[in-house]
Length: 217
Ligand code: OGA
Ligand code: MN
Image (cartoon, rainbow, N blue to C red; front, side, top):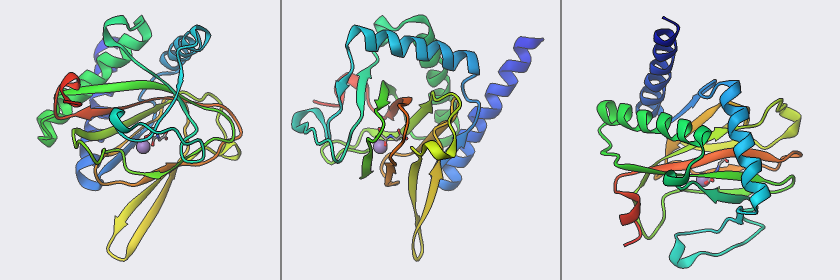
Protein backbone atom coordinates (compact mmCIF):
# COMPACT_ATOMS: atom_id res chain seq x y z
CA UNK A 1 0.00 0.00 0.00
CA UNK A 2 2.74 2.42 1.01
CA UNK A 3 4.70 1.36 -2.06
CA UNK A 4 1.69 2.05 -4.26
CA UNK A 5 1.37 5.53 -2.79
CA UNK A 6 5.06 6.19 -3.40
CA UNK A 7 4.74 5.04 -7.02
CA UNK A 8 1.71 7.25 -7.47
CA UNK A 9 3.64 10.27 -6.13
CA UNK A 10 6.57 9.56 -8.45
CA UNK A 11 4.26 9.22 -11.44
CA UNK A 12 2.76 12.61 -10.64
CA UNK A 13 6.27 14.07 -10.67
CA UNK A 14 7.10 12.49 -14.02
CA UNK A 15 3.83 13.86 -15.36
CA UNK A 16 4.72 17.35 -14.09
CA UNK A 17 8.10 17.15 -15.82
CA UNK A 18 6.59 16.06 -19.16
CA UNK A 19 3.72 18.59 -19.03
CA UNK A 20 5.82 21.61 -18.14
CA UNK A 21 8.56 20.67 -20.60
CA UNK A 22 6.12 20.53 -23.48
CA UNK A 23 4.23 23.66 -22.37
CA UNK A 24 7.12 25.92 -21.40
CA UNK A 25 10.37 24.22 -22.33
CA UNK A 26 11.40 23.83 -18.68
CA UNK A 27 10.18 22.21 -15.46
CA UNK A 28 10.98 22.64 -11.77
CA UNK A 29 9.89 19.80 -9.49
CA UNK A 30 10.42 19.91 -5.73
CA UNK A 31 11.04 16.78 -3.64
CA UNK A 32 12.03 14.88 -6.74
CA UNK A 33 14.56 13.25 -4.40
CA UNK A 34 13.61 12.48 -0.81
CA UNK A 35 15.69 13.88 2.06
CA UNK A 36 17.27 10.47 2.70
CA UNK A 37 18.14 10.00 -0.98
CA UNK A 38 19.81 13.42 -0.97
CA UNK A 39 21.81 12.48 2.12
CA UNK A 40 22.92 9.16 0.56
CA UNK A 41 24.02 10.95 -2.62
CA UNK A 42 25.94 13.53 -0.57
CA UNK A 43 27.77 10.65 1.15
CA UNK A 44 28.72 9.25 -2.26
CA UNK A 45 29.82 12.71 -3.40
CA UNK A 46 32.12 13.19 -0.42
CA UNK A 47 33.50 9.68 -0.94
CA UNK A 48 34.43 10.68 -4.52
CA UNK A 49 35.97 13.90 -3.20
CA UNK A 50 38.11 11.90 -0.77
CA UNK A 51 39.19 9.68 -3.68
CA UNK A 52 40.27 12.85 -5.48
CA UNK A 53 38.30 12.00 -8.63
CA UNK A 54 36.69 15.40 -9.24
CA UNK A 55 38.16 17.40 -12.13
CA UNK A 56 37.94 21.02 -13.17
CA UNK A 57 35.11 21.25 -15.70
CA UNK A 58 35.77 22.47 -19.24
CA UNK A 59 33.77 24.24 -21.92
CA UNK A 60 32.69 22.60 -25.18
CA UNK A 61 32.80 19.00 -26.40
CA UNK A 62 35.81 16.84 -25.48
CA UNK A 63 37.69 17.54 -28.72
CA UNK A 64 37.98 21.22 -27.93
CA UNK A 65 37.86 21.28 -24.17
CA UNK A 66 38.98 24.56 -22.66
CA UNK A 67 39.14 25.44 -18.99
CA UNK A 68 38.35 29.02 -18.07
CA UNK A 69 37.70 29.71 -14.40
CA UNK A 70 36.05 33.06 -15.08
CA UNK A 71 33.42 31.41 -17.28
CA UNK A 72 32.96 28.10 -15.48
CA UNK A 73 34.23 27.41 -11.95
CA UNK A 74 32.78 24.00 -11.10
CA UNK A 75 34.39 20.60 -10.52
CA UNK A 76 32.79 17.46 -11.91
CA UNK A 77 32.96 13.71 -11.58
CA UNK A 78 31.24 11.70 -14.34
CA UNK A 79 29.13 8.74 -13.25
CA UNK A 80 30.15 5.39 -14.70
CA UNK A 81 26.88 3.42 -14.59
CA UNK A 82 28.71 0.07 -14.44
CA UNK A 83 30.56 1.16 -11.26
CA UNK A 84 27.80 3.19 -9.61
CA UNK A 85 27.42 2.86 -5.84
CA UNK A 86 23.90 1.93 -4.63
CA UNK A 87 22.59 5.51 -4.03
CA UNK A 88 23.87 6.54 -7.47
CA UNK A 89 22.22 3.47 -8.99
CA UNK A 90 18.90 4.43 -7.38
CA UNK A 91 19.29 7.88 -8.95
CA UNK A 92 20.13 6.46 -12.39
CA UNK A 93 17.15 4.09 -12.22
CA UNK A 94 14.92 7.09 -11.45
CA UNK A 95 16.31 8.98 -14.45
CA UNK A 96 15.75 5.90 -16.59
CA UNK A 97 12.08 5.91 -15.60
CA UNK A 98 11.89 9.65 -16.35
CA UNK A 99 13.40 9.09 -19.79
CA UNK A 100 10.89 6.36 -20.67
CA UNK A 101 8.00 8.43 -19.35
CA UNK A 102 9.07 11.44 -21.43
CA UNK A 103 9.46 9.25 -24.53
CA UNK A 104 5.90 7.98 -24.14
CA UNK A 105 4.48 11.50 -23.84
CA UNK A 106 6.81 13.94 -25.62
CA UNK A 107 8.22 11.89 -28.54
CA UNK A 108 11.76 13.22 -28.24
CA UNK A 109 13.27 9.83 -29.12
CA UNK A 110 15.58 9.84 -26.10
CA UNK A 111 17.96 6.87 -26.04
CA UNK A 112 20.50 7.44 -23.27
CA UNK A 113 21.66 9.80 -20.53
CA UNK A 114 24.91 10.96 -18.96
CA UNK A 115 25.31 12.47 -15.49
CA UNK A 116 28.03 13.91 -13.32
CA UNK A 117 28.35 14.96 -9.71
CA UNK A 118 29.05 18.69 -9.54
CA UNK A 119 30.66 20.96 -6.96
CA UNK A 120 30.77 24.75 -7.24
CA UNK A 121 33.18 26.15 -4.63
CA UNK A 122 32.03 29.41 -2.96
CA UNK A 123 32.55 32.34 -5.34
CA UNK A 124 32.42 30.30 -8.54
CA UNK A 125 29.94 30.73 -11.39
CA UNK A 126 28.99 29.34 -14.77
CA UNK A 127 28.34 32.24 -17.12
CA UNK A 128 25.43 32.34 -19.54
CA UNK A 129 25.49 29.42 -22.00
CA UNK A 130 23.42 26.80 -23.83
CA UNK A 131 24.07 23.11 -23.09
CA UNK A 132 23.81 21.71 -26.61
CA UNK A 133 27.26 21.64 -28.21
CA UNK A 134 27.94 23.42 -31.48
CA UNK A 135 29.70 20.28 -32.76
CA UNK A 136 26.96 17.74 -31.91
CA UNK A 137 23.30 18.18 -31.13
CA UNK A 138 22.54 14.96 -29.26
CA UNK A 139 21.91 16.64 -25.90
CA UNK A 140 18.15 17.23 -25.96
CA UNK A 141 17.25 17.83 -22.30
CA UNK A 142 19.29 19.14 -19.36
CA UNK A 143 18.62 17.91 -15.81
CA UNK A 144 20.00 19.21 -12.53
CA UNK A 145 19.17 17.66 -9.16
CA UNK A 146 20.25 19.79 -6.22
CA UNK A 147 21.75 18.35 -3.06
CA UNK A 148 22.01 21.45 -0.83
CA UNK A 149 20.47 20.98 2.60
CA UNK A 150 19.34 24.13 4.47
CA UNK A 151 20.03 26.38 1.50
CA UNK A 152 18.70 29.93 2.00
CA UNK A 153 18.14 32.75 -0.53
CA UNK A 154 21.04 34.70 1.04
CA UNK A 155 23.40 31.87 0.04
CA UNK A 156 22.83 32.84 -3.61
CA UNK A 157 23.73 30.24 -6.25
CA UNK A 158 20.54 30.58 -8.26
CA UNK A 159 20.18 28.89 -11.59
CA UNK A 160 18.96 31.70 -13.86
CA UNK A 161 17.00 30.71 -16.96
CA UNK A 162 16.53 33.17 -19.82
CA UNK A 163 13.20 32.31 -21.40
CA UNK A 164 12.52 33.54 -24.90
CA UNK A 165 9.62 36.03 -25.08
CA UNK A 166 8.09 37.92 -27.99
CA UNK A 167 9.78 41.14 -26.89
CA UNK A 168 13.06 39.99 -25.43
CA UNK A 169 13.52 37.61 -22.52
CA UNK A 170 12.13 36.70 -19.13
CA UNK A 171 14.50 35.70 -16.32
CA UNK A 172 13.54 32.91 -13.94
CA UNK A 173 15.71 32.32 -10.85
CA UNK A 174 15.77 28.91 -9.19
CA UNK A 175 17.36 28.26 -5.80
CA UNK A 176 19.40 25.03 -5.68
CA UNK A 177 17.56 23.50 -2.72
CA UNK A 178 17.91 19.84 -1.75
CA UNK A 179 15.67 17.44 -3.66
CA UNK A 180 14.69 19.96 -6.32
CA UNK A 181 14.93 18.98 -9.99
CA UNK A 182 15.36 21.57 -12.72
CA UNK A 183 15.12 20.47 -16.33
CA UNK A 184 14.95 22.32 -19.62
CA UNK A 185 15.48 22.08 -23.36
CA UNK A 186 19.24 21.81 -23.92
CA UNK A 187 18.98 23.42 -27.37
CA UNK A 188 16.75 26.38 -26.51
CA UNK A 189 17.25 27.82 -23.06
CA UNK A 190 20.26 29.99 -22.20
CA UNK A 191 21.05 29.89 -18.48
CA UNK A 192 23.73 30.67 -15.92
CA UNK A 193 24.78 29.78 -12.38
CA UNK A 194 25.05 32.77 -10.07
CA UNK A 195 27.68 33.13 -7.38
CA UNK A 196 27.07 31.43 -4.01
CA UNK A 197 28.56 31.85 -0.55
CA UNK A 198 28.51 28.10 0.20
CA UNK A 199 29.67 25.00 -1.66
CA UNK A 200 26.92 24.15 -4.13
CA UNK A 201 26.33 20.44 -4.84
CA UNK A 202 24.29 18.77 -7.57
CA UNK A 203 23.90 15.96 -10.05
CA UNK A 204 23.87 17.34 -13.56
CA UNK A 205 23.18 15.55 -16.81
CA UNK A 206 21.62 15.27 -20.19
CA UNK A 207 19.24 13.04 -22.06
CA UNK A 208 20.53 12.18 -25.49
CA UNK A 209 18.88 11.10 -28.73
CA UNK A 210 21.78 8.74 -29.37
CA UNK A 211 23.66 6.17 -27.28
CA UNK A 212 26.30 7.90 -25.17
CA UNK A 213 29.20 5.97 -26.69
CA UNK A 214 28.18 7.14 -30.18
CA UNK A 215 27.82 10.87 -29.48
CA UNK A 216 31.46 11.77 -30.01
CA UNK A 217 31.97 9.81 -33.24
C1 OGA B 1 25.57 23.11 -16.39
C2 OGA B 1 24.65 24.07 -15.74
C3 OGA B 1 23.23 24.64 -13.86
C4 OGA B 1 23.13 24.45 -12.38
O1 OGA B 1 26.24 22.33 -15.71
O2 OGA B 1 25.64 23.12 -17.65
O3 OGA B 1 24.20 24.97 -16.39
O4 OGA B 1 22.15 24.96 -11.80
N1 OGA B 1 24.28 23.88 -14.44
O5 OGA B 1 24.00 23.83 -11.78
MN1 MN C 1 24.26 24.45 -18.48
